[in-house]
Length: 149
Ligand code: ZN
View 1 (cartoon, rainbow, N blue to C red):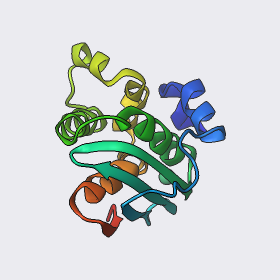
View 2 (tube, rainbow, N blue to C red):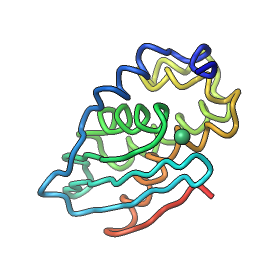
View 3 (cartoon, rainbow, N blue to C red):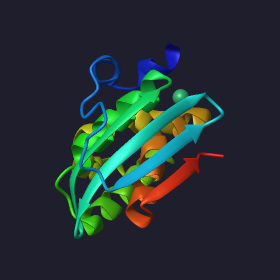
View 4 (cartoon, rainbow, N blue to C red):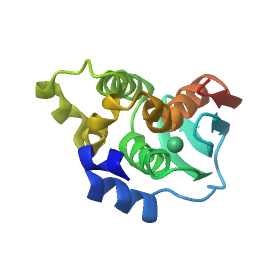
């Protein structure tokens, strides 16, 4: 996969092979289905929202390595965070994917910065952002279906 040459290949492949927060959690009060028809990525996201905080969340999905690794890293990055913190992170990640985040600011993203190379591959931006679209929807609605198209 040539695209991964410009990504942090190891980290992404590792999260694809052994995704974190994988499998349905029983006490979720939000449930979102996400779909990226361009690549064929599908995911289901469960979120346990308590007040304004994401107490727990998990996903299941099938698709390319980037979409799965992104969902794995997204879930581990936002667990325990407040809605405001998550929205700030979402904005930073979106900037990273469209190439407008200054290199000096990528440190705030931690491991999510592994996706910085994706901005060179517009079609793959949708793979990396699918789980974030789903998360955004989960913060607004209890049940939702999102698509990247
Ligand atoms: Zn994909």
